[in-house]
Length: 379
Image (cartoon, rainbow, N blue to C red; front, top):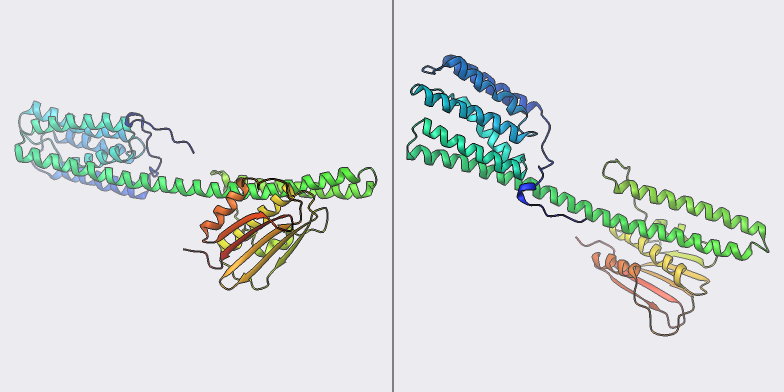
């Protein structure tokens, strides 16, 4: 995945804003009840009806603060600014309700869920309103210091929770990317195996088509069946790679499924030998053995020259299990070829499980792939 850097000004709003639920309605209900009680019972409030109505204007802002953080902050702190202007115009009396402290919640929401542009604009507006309020209330140095510390605490709290939420999202995204890489490998292993089998069968069909038509029909039927299995496996993997769709996950194939890779015909024949004491392997080791055998078989079918037999042998030796895949193909003259992506992927898979891997030509001809894995996967 390619990540395009953005400046703070164009930073998108976080996507973790939850929908309006019961806690929001409970908060708004408590706030509205507090405003009504304070507006009716608190003595010495100038322009009591107007102040109470303006304070109740914060109700919709509190409900929508997570989805429209800038708009709600401008509304809430705008109401606070209007009250400060009225207080300056009245010259005396107390126009502020203690319930108006709810605007701090709107400031928190702005910094928690607002985009970079919204945070800059909203914070500047809040700073102007705070300065106006301190001027209207003839605040002393102690009040200025205490108010500033309170605002900074709200800002710091919002920044901490925003950072934690962003970190959690990045971790989830990284986990999803790792899963997709693993699924891409599984897709490569599965599809490459089936396509290689189709190619071999098609070559055999071309050879016998002229002399044995009935045999060619059988080969074509095998090709059709193999192609259907390939499409089914590929569609299953692609569904997993799509975020929007819910997928029913099936168990991964393991050592118990290796006999399904055996076939007597067409050339090369595949023989599978599995030790009977491999019924309790760790799931990662069990799945890795199948994928390694499948990839090694695919490589043998593709690249082994004049091979008539491919042997897959799995044996347990103490606390380790050994997989050996060999063919009787004819070796190419000259230096050994460089390992391709298939061999590199197999080696990496084995190393991640704490095992050892080797691949190369046999002295008697052909190619052998050998992997030794611990029975229990490392933590």
